[in-house]
Amino acid sequence: MRTPTHDDFSDGFDSRRDGDRPVFGPELGEFPNADQRRQSAGEGDTNEMKTGTTTVGLKTADGVVLATDMRASAGYMVASKDVQKVEEIHPTGALTIAGSVSAAQSLIRSLKAEVSLYESRRGEDMSMKALSTLTANFLRSGAFLIVQPILGGVDDEGPHIYSIDPLGGTTEEEYTVTGSGSQYALGVLEQEYDEELSIEEAKTVSARAIKSAVERDLASGNGINVAVVTDEGVDISRHKDFDEVL
Image 1 (tube, one colour):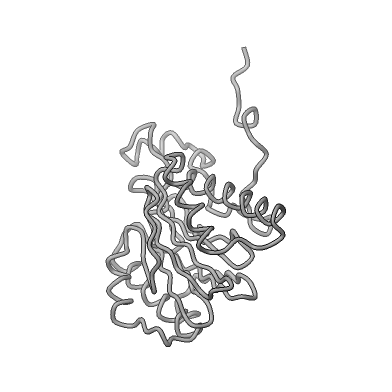
Image 2: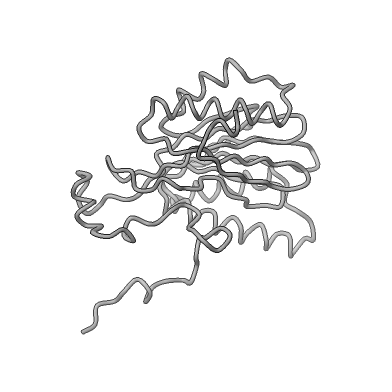
């Protein structure tokens, strides 16, 4: 009897940005000698790729800035050095992720589908409050454990930043952090955040926060993703060198 392969069960989804690389980096099973790598990580056959992560979100008068590092880990191994941890899910909204890569990919697919369906049915964009509720409801279902996102976006009421815990608890914030390096990033934000920050100033503050975490947190590193969300849309940039943003 033929052993089933991954392709037998694939839903055809390819989580790639610009058609050239996976949004969240390769799944662990795509690495050569994946079983040996799992064992060397000390987690046995149950080890999965996690983002580790430091993510931050800041609100400004003109929009929001979301920033993340670019490292994914599998146990004590760096599984990927080129991971995109912030993704557009709405014409003027984006989501960062910390936690399980597979759950995050599934959550983002589900959110994009629901946002598209909402727009098709109602002929208008979903509000950020509605989108935060939808995200929280997905997480509360238990189907996406464990993911801790930051949702940032702009609607008719202005810019919004939502911190959403893995069980669906939601709070709207001026700035927030998630992930294993969050305590280091939060110290920077506490000192440097101001509600009068411009978009460019917020990008610099967010980069300083991520850099602080990268210097101390083993699960964070390898560069920075920055998303700027305004009423004109979502712009995501990638930087291996922090000096490009600082």
